[in-house]
Length: 365
Image (tube, rainbow, N blue to C red; front, side, top):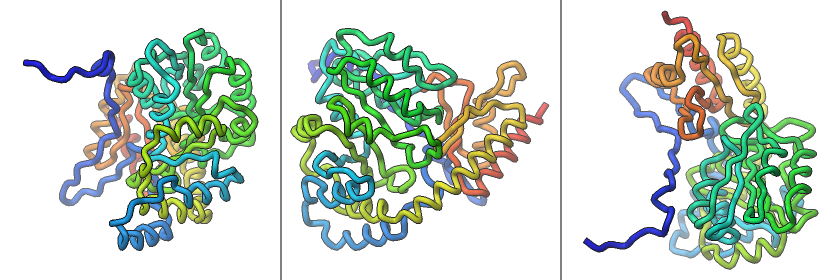
């Protein structure tokens, strides 16, 4: 039977697998710690604005997300004309790939990088080239070693998901300096709001001083608007112009846009979330390590827990053990980390319950 055939390579792409959602059971409280969602939800001001917007759902959104671009510009000191908003930063990553990658091109990402990068690369007929990491951290020299005449784009999540590691700004600048000028460097700063390191910069300075670098960000993490799908990019005028030519004119809904404006202006809500994350990330790292497990140092709102192979305490068994107790973490087989689980920093109750569950799991004979 004749039927439409996908473009070459499409069926070779492994689809993105999100963190599993818990299945509620009577009498059991469930904590979803598999998707790096904030335990506090969005700003109450964002919720109120979102509800008010429901009175005008018959109207198309303003096609350029102007009010949101202006709010982002005020928050970060940026020119709104150099900002693009999208349905989550995922959409913007795909738009960048569609704009700058074609059949036979190459795009580089690191071994344990965000899975959207190879998907966006391959969807446009390009080849995904994977650079090794050092201690689960992007390695500038390893990336530069893989650059060829076919390289058109480099993806760098900073901080990285799912490892939680980061590159200091000096290293990011060294990477940019080592890349040919025709290679686009995409800095994905989705988790930058949680970083408290003096040597970190989310990428704005580099974008502002170059013609071949962009920085993407999201409202899905510290702002708690994951369900609304809002992201943004800051880039050179020429790249913004090119991407805008293929961006859908109404890609951010009015309720999402207005809620995002309220969220970015509620700095107290953001600071509360950051302080909580700093405290419990440190506590969990220390306490989980005491159990004989290894935790990769993280600067984001999650930790990566490694299970030793020699004692038979596998990550799969730990995942099943915790899930039965209503504690849902993220298995990472599709990230090439079959012996690790990623845990989102949750409420105090959730964090203590996970530690208690891990302690009980590790003590089992």
